[in-house]
Length: 340
Image 1 (cartoon, helix red, strand yellow):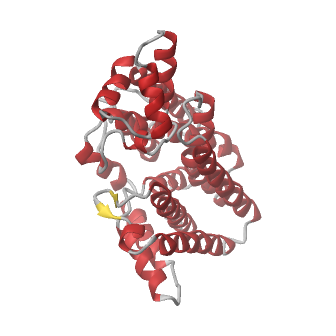
Image 2: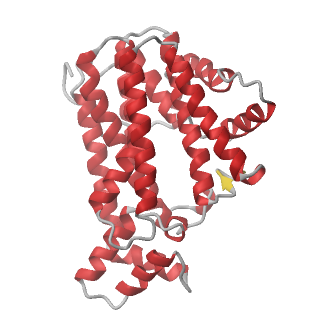
Image 3: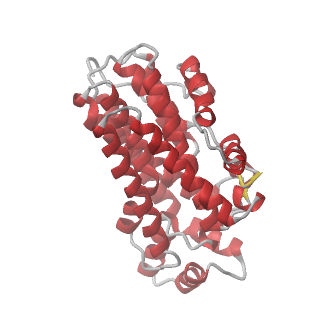
């Protein structure tokens, strides 16, 4: 940056406040997420509308729009289009995740697989990915197409790696980081680096990539901590769902490591719960993870990743007073504030 680093004492803005920084761009992009679909099959459109309408905060496209304004402070139709494509890909991964996890609800609303069936959900998820690449071809940019094709492969590999380690009590922190780098962080990286390609700003590629990766890592670690300490009503799922699904998350990986080092009599209790996804007393197992010290370790790891994401923003040759830069910074602070 051209001056001192952004202060960490800034009052954390709400998500709506950050979104308002690029309000007009965001509104146009949001309409494009569904508007870019053109299937002649009515079922494809109905299911797509269902999952897109049930979508979340559109954080990945918001990051794309903020990064685009950093590159050039003007409305960019290509950037808005790319942001919509990024959200389309994200939506497809959620549809597939719900099938794999046999989820009936997402954010309190029925999933596509619960509303229709698994086969319909999988095929519509496939369509969303195919349509996203169909739209990417329209940019006539081989570097952009390569970024997204490589990234989508990484996302799929991350999901398969997570499946490979399902119910594996021997999964390590390195295994976990490889999983989340693919299934979560890669799309954040695509959302940022794609903008640098669009605006022909190769000098920003590395900083954008570092921001996307570390923000994504922090975001996922925080999500996994909240599975053991969050508010079920806010999260839209029950505490301990990740454990029941056998997902190798950092809280259980670290708790197993700590309990084993302590020769704890409860080590086997947690190990069996991870292996089977079943326990006679889920609250006891959740409390075991909470009391082990694993969550505090995970919180510190999330804050480390947040600090690295902020360091990547510091490395950008952009003045601290830039409102779009501050918006990205505030997103990192907002994510971390979920730990409080």
